[in-house]
Image (tube, one colour):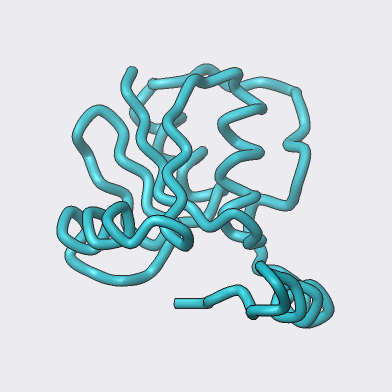
Length: 116
């Protein structure tokens, strides 16, 4: 199975997708849409919209999805088998306001992190 995940480095939704990949021990390509504008443009072109995360599974684009939605897609299409393992992060929630504030104050030499 070939998985390409268009994710933000620090985002609750993106962390949820990563947690699902880890939960099922799936190999995937983690594509940074914040620090690489070409990757962001590719995501928008392939998904037809600008929101993330987007996950491409064997050529099928799941646009603007949560980790929970990715998991449901994989289970319903029998791409993974159900497991009792717990995800390492929430799979259906954004970052908290406090996390967004912390991220906005970080960055290279005081420059804020961009949010699309």
